[in-house]
Length: 145
Figure: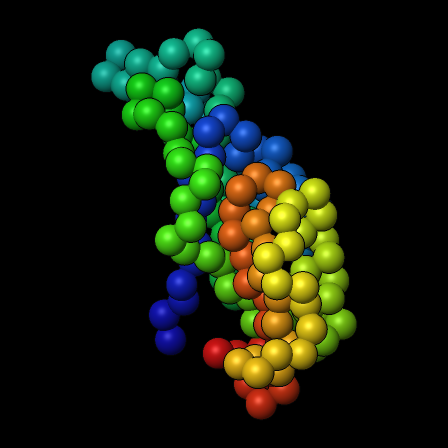
């Protein structure tokens, strides 16, 4: 079965955000590439963007959370966009609570985690980096949507 792996764009703080996500999910980065790693005469990199992340990948279970910093020459990311969310289906209420508490720290909670009519246990928030998340647990699906 194919996997869906979210990819997030950042305005220069991808490394900070991914270190935060790693502190919540655990694990190790599968890949970190900086713009300076690709620098060449065909692909010049501005000095102020050399250490920014061109690609970062954090395995989470069988999935991979990926991201990068958007080069200033390409404009900036709208940090208030609200067209998409990253949904996490936890394997237990305890895991849902841990992930919700960890990821929402310093962010804005939109729906506190708890029992709900559309999912057995659900919460929604925007983290301190502006990324929107939904966390749920439903024993009927045991962590699978």
